[in-house]
Amino acid sequence: MTGVVVGADGSACGLQAVAVAAREALLRHCPLRVVHGFLWPYFPVSLSPSAVGPPEGGLRNEARRIVGEALEHARKAAPGVEATGEVVTGSADAVLVAESRGADLAVVGDRGLGGFGGLLLGSTGVQLSAHAGCPVLVVRGRPEPDGPVLLGVDGSPASAPAVDFAFAEAELRGVPLVALHAWTGPVSGGPGDMLPLAFDADLVAAEEERLMAEALAGARADRPGVAVEERLLRTRTRPALIEASREAQLLVVGARGRGGFTGLLLGAVSQAVLHHAECPVAVVHKR
Image: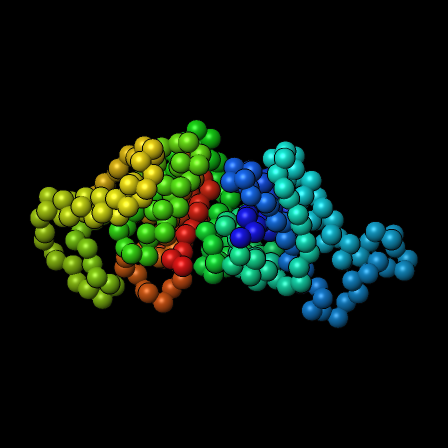
């Protein structure tokens, strides 16, 4: 494993992600790798300094400057962190996805230099969250420094790695874990299933409570020192998680859950919190 990997693009948002990644690496006692996706070699343009310009000019030197600035920023944010950097040929999203396959954690800002200013989450963040080979931390919002780790629980087998990750993060940070499970009706097997018009809410609530207890049981046994607050709410999942994220330092969700269309790499809940959460969001795939 290479530790923590983060993308650098020279933007203010990118530098914020680098600082967060450096602190995450220091917290985990692992190295930090800063990468810059350098797309220009694929185009018929000169990468070297202009004959009439300064020797430090040129596209390749600019890419190296971005990495150097990011490394300096990382060491200031987390003194003592072991950090290295590299300019890697390829688009930012392709480079980060490839780097994530050997990493413990991949970090990216919610916005970068490219894309459209009106979008809430940049394309690199979307692509990395959908395709990464390790948990992805999207830096966004204003995290509550002393807040808990917030975990979205849906009880699906695909979400089990997110449960384990959230418990590990809470233990690592020395904070409680808030496990939130929201429901509005009986469990549906898929988007084509018909929900009954009438149901016993008490029976459904008891079943949802059992589902959450089973989802947390293994991680609870593995990490008995983590204090857990269970929140079982009869409401829609997306707004419940977004509201609860205001008091959290980290929100953890699985990439996919119950319901929705199985062909999608990111479920509706994970997409919603990536765009609207008030704190950083970790998306954890089932490997």
